[in-house]
Image (cartoon, rainbow over all chains, first blue to last red; front, side):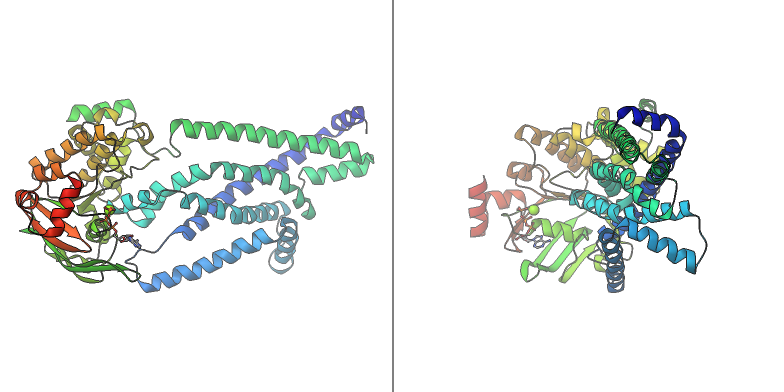
Length: 252
Length: 241
Ligand SMILES: Nc1ncnc2c1ncn2[C@@H]1O[C@H](COP(=O)(O)OP(=O)(O)OP(=O)(O)O)[C@@H](O)[C@H]1O
Ligand SMILES: [Mg+2]
C-alpha cells in the first residue's frame, strides 16, 4: 500500500467520496433522529405502569401492546440490518409501491434504530427516581403529563451517552445499506475501487473518512453532554429570566 | 366539620397486613401528628389518603366524600398536598418551575398567575431568592421548604407530611419545622408523620399513636406525652425521648 496513491485517489475521486459522505450523514442523522422519536414513543409506552386504581380492561390492553413492542424490539435487534434492508426494500418494491431507494434506506435505519432506542429510553426512565413520579401524581398531574414534563426529560438526560452512541453506530453501520445501492460512502468506495483496481488504498481512504466522521461526532456529543450537566437541565421549561422574576417580586 | 374521617381502614400487601382497622379524624384547621414505631403503617396510611394506594376495606371520607367513589382522582389529589421525606423536587427544573408546573397543568392557571402565586409561597418559606436555582444546588432544608411551597401553590385543603425532617442534617431540622409551625398558626389543616416529639408536643392539636397497624391511643399532646394510658405508648415514648 502506498500513501501517495491514497492521496492521489482522494484527489481524483473526492467528489464521489463527498457524495458518499453526504448520503451517509443524511441517512445516519435522519435515521438516528426518527429512531429517537420512535424510541421515545415506544419506550415511553413500555415504561407506563397502570395505576393501582386503573380499570382491568386498560390493564389488559397495556399487556397486549407490550407484547407487540417486545416482538418489534426482538426482531429488529435480533436480525442484521443488511438483511432487514434487502427484505423490506424488496417486500415493499414488489408488493406495494416502487419506492425510492433513499427513502427505503432511511425507513429501515429509522425502525432499526427505534428498536435500540426504545430499550435505551426504557432503561433511562427506569433510572429516574420513583419519587419523581409520586410527587407529580400527588400534585394531581396525570400519568401522561408526568411522563412528558418530569420523567422523559430526566430519562433523556440519563440516556444521552447511549443515545449519542447510536448516532456513531449509525454513521458506521449505514454502510450495510449499500446493499440496496444508495450512494452512501461504502457504495461509493466500491465503485471507486472497481474503477481504480487499487482496493487497499481506496478502502484505506474510506476507513479514514469514517474515522473522521465518528471522531468529530464524538467531540460534538461530548460537548453537548457537558453542557447538559453544567446547566443541570435537559429541556427548557419556561421563562425564568431574572427580569420575569423581579416582576413577580414587585407584584407581591 | 371533619375534613378527613378514616373509618376501619384495612390494607395489605400480598398477605402482609399493614393496616388492620384504622380509625381517626381530622377537623378543619387541626394539626394532627401521627407517631409510632417503624413499620407500623404510617406512610401507608398517608398514601391511602392521597390515593397512591387503594384500601382493602373500610372508608376514607374527605370533605364529606368517600374517596373510593371519586371520579377525577387528579383533581382530588391536587387538593390533598403531600410532602415527602426525600423532598422529591423535580430535578429537571428550577425552583420556580417546580412550583408552577402543576398549577399550569392541573389548575390551568396562566403562566403569570402561576408565577405570582409561586413567588408568594416561596417568599413565605424564605426561598424567594432561590427561584432560579436547581434542586441539586440546594441543601436538604432548602429543598424541603421548596417542596412545601410547591404543595401550597395548589391551594390544598389539607397537607400530608411523611417524616419531613427525617432525611435532614440536624442543623436544618429547625428551619423546616418553623415553616410548618407558621402554617399551623395560619390554621392550615395538617397530618404530620414525625419522630420529632418535642415538635409534636408543641404544634399538634391531636396526637395519634399507631403500632402494628392499629391506633393504640389518641388524644391531646399533653395527655399522650405526660399521661399515656397504653403500656406500648409508654414504652415507645420512653425509647424515643
Ligand atoms: N408497596 C409495598 N409493597 C409491599 N410491602 C409494603 C409496601 N409498602 C409498605 N410495605 C410494608 O408495609 C409495612 C408498613 O410500612 P410503612 O412504610 O407504612 O411503615 P411506616 O410506619 O411508615 O414506617 P417508617 O417509620 O419506617 O417509615 C412495612 O412492613 C413495609 O415493608
Ligand atoms: Mg414511613
